Image 1 (cartoon, rainbow, N blue to C red):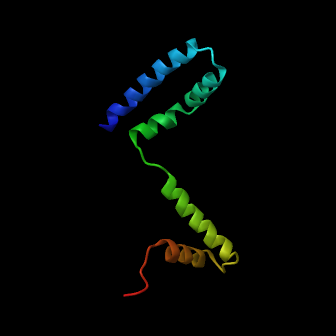
Image 2 (cartoon, rainbow, N blue to C red; image 1 turned 45 degrees about the vertical axis):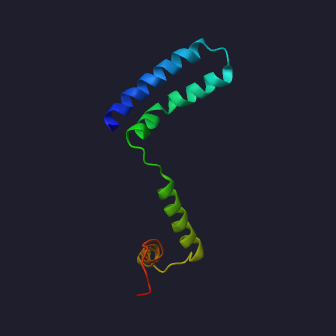
Amino acid sequence: MELKKRPLGQAFFASLKKWVDRCQLEPIKRVCAMIHQWLENVLTYCKHPIPNGVAQGLNSKIMSIKRRAEDFRNVENFKTAIYFNCGGLSLYP
């Protein structure tokens, strides 16, 4: 099913671009130009609808760990802290 979404997205954007070319509204033309600039990324999202919110949340958690303990003695201690806080381990039986 996902393989069909990319050509549909391309066809939709092509028809949208034709409409925008005839349009007289400059803000709409700017938005269309921005979409055109990032069209490959938009079409990739159509094929694989996976948001990056989870990765951003995990990155935020890692940055919080880094701020709390700026002076880890070595990289292994930092990695252990990340595994401990982000690993979802249950400390209680």
